[in-house]
Image (cartoon, rainbow, N blue to C red):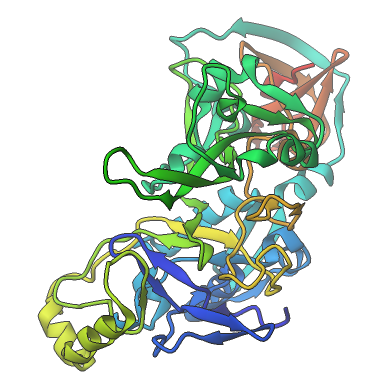
Length: 472
């Protein structure tokens, strides 16, 4: 996909059940649904960031970002119904300042964004690359050493990697599955373990369509763990299908089920204590959920409404009990208003509404795949996508997890022992780079602070530093 500007993927408004940007599939090709009379667009995160830079009048260099496939195709899913006539992307973005946006972006991408206000330029580098480029510093002329035990009464360590990293709760229904650290802690010892995801699909394939019966030892209730991808699953029913109707006793149903990943977006926990400090990410994974047998999986969005503006026109309803003909008649009866009238009815003299307070992210490289099999295309938030009929899976380059071994290894950061910190006075001809790993008395340290003294004679060679030891 060469045009990394914006796309119009189907999405469900959770408040109404309407599908925006709906499409149909026939003769091995997609086409817009006959009721899709206008589109709402989702921009790529890189495109939005460039637009912000240009609006500020700043040049930018995002080469490292553009070269990383996991991040190049990150899509901002925030959008509004076409009928609301809010085409400007700013309407669906949170009310963050530019400084807040770049600070949150740095944290989400694990990057360092340098804003040079004098030269009006912005540069981008991944933090792991920055850290790995700094050579270690050996301090061999130590004058004095002092260590102190860190207690709960002492100030907390400000090192970012010493704090738990969690996604902010986005409030949508699927988040209970996406982030459930306490559930995993409570039940992981009893999880049924497999080496490969294909083994799970083979061993649980009988539950793709389930008759609803539950026994005390029925394995449909298993918590499943797959070593190869470091992920947990449960079997979740997503659709109820009438099999046989009875007049004198309950009807018979089957249930369509999916292999539901659980805690995929749980926190990166370095301190499990209840008083542990947390850093929250406000750029969060979007919700991808099952609609029905016709449309399959889709992007779901939940946002604050707008009084006086109806969003039904140009969408396809999947949850209201009416025929297509009835739906068309209702659309014909609707009074569509020009934008100026909509603004008056919505209260244009008031502060612009904040429809989203977070940025919802997914991954989309523009390719449809065999797993979709003619149903709605959807962006990815997981780095594995299981076919709806459990026949197989594929691995996109989505990279939104923060709690697995692979994502932590890629961060390229150092773990420190937060129970003790040291202060050293030492002799040095120059001020060392405080971001380096320091080798002092045969041990490795990270620097919290360096203090140097300047006199009329110049820089004093006696320096003082506060350090945290690296964890073994």
